[in-house]
Length: 103
Image (cartoon, rainbow, N blue to C red; front, side, top):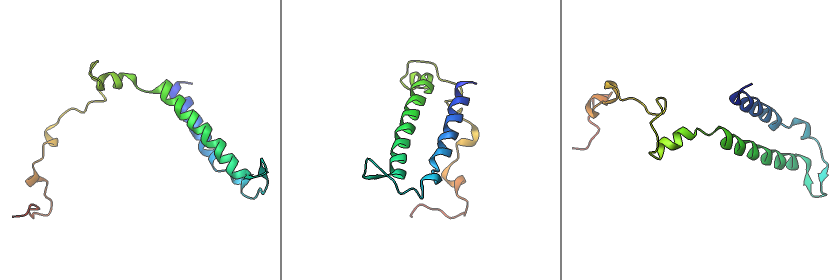
């Protein structure tokens, strides 16, 4: 399994574990003060933060960082190519035929 597949799998598992329906009716306290559901979500938040930190550390597109800093060639998918349809004048963009600028 490639890196993207592992990340997606862990993300789906975390999304399923976020729905903690098994703790809804549990009235026990953790450390005598914290409801189980709150302790579960505190632990879940720490695990999710660790997961996303690792995703950013190992999967961040460094070639885009280098390109943005001006140190490398642009990545073809990162830079949109200009097209003739992207240069629309304000008059041509008006759909209702009414000039939107005050006179």
